[in-house]
Amino acid sequence: MVLLLDNDVTERVLDMADAVPVIEDAFTQLGTGNAAFYPLAELVSPTAGAGDCYTWGSHIGAVRDPPRLAFRFKSDVVRWEESAAGTTREKFNGEPGTFMGFVLLFDTTDGTLLAMLNDGVVQHVRVGATAGVACDHLAREDATSVGFLGSGGMAHAYLEAFDAVRDLTELRVYSPTAEHREAFAREAAETYDLEATAVDDPAEAARDVDVLATCTNASQPVLDPAWLTPGQFVVNVRAIEIPPAALDRFDRRLATSNEPYETRLFGTPEERAFLESKFDHGDQTTAFDTLGEVLAGAVPGRTDDEEVVYFDNRAAGLQFAAVGDLVYRRAVEAGLGTAIPLDWFQQQVKN
Image 1 (cartoon, rainbow, N blue to C red):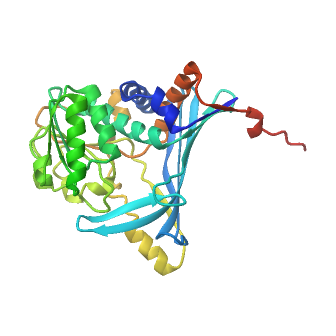
Image 2 (cartoon, helix red, strand yellow):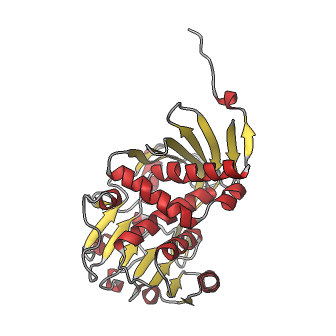
Image 3 (spheres, rainbow, N blue to C red):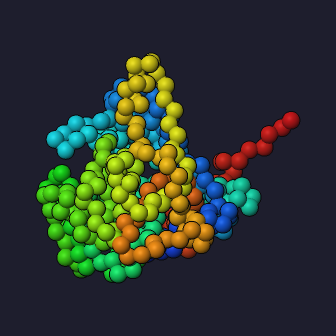
């Protein structure tokens, strides 16, 4: 049987504290040659009627232990919204507020399909858990304060992951919408028993914190290199958030991998030019040391308390294999999910 696991089931069985070590193990396997993935691939069409374009995105990744492969895909219409805060990229499927994304989880011992998961919860947890692993190995051991540029879903996931690996006592958060940053600060204070402050200046959120996270959907850089402070650990959600000028201010630069995203565009020359101007994933041409190499002991992590260390949290398909398997095992143990006959997905082909 194949299990269909929706976001409600995933929320019931998945927590960040358990996802962090699972992700750590997956990247350790990557560093020792026992895991592999393809980078995010996007196919972009300018033919959407209700937005600026249509995008198909997919990841593939596998780990040896447990023997799992995951294929994650998403189907979106994209709009770019202009506001006083800048340009943001808004996505939907069918109508605003609705999304489509699935993870197919396979057993690589016999190739069978094990589960089909909505990707909403898994998506946030796998990115947040990776940031948490990086924080654990690259932030100062005595790090207690965190600053956020952005207050959306990824900011919540990052905070939960940071709290799992460090004893946080202080948080500062900036986002362009005062209501959003104030709500984030209130929830953080209540949930994590720390001093949380919403600030109206991004520099105030960034300066003098031990851990700095950019968690936005912006289409342009949001970090000023002048805000960086000795000893900080800096982690992004999207490479575009970090301006090229900041790279020279980092003492160490690491990433999930050195595989750049691949975007294929089609349409008229004018349409392709427009899309090329919008689909900027930031600088991914510089080769960084990788998280897997740090975990495998091939390269050092932080080497002193004064280093400013940057981690580029690029997407990696093996994250879905690792977290997807955790969700699948927990759902089986709890008797959750909707069972679908495996033979619906198999066939016998006659010569």
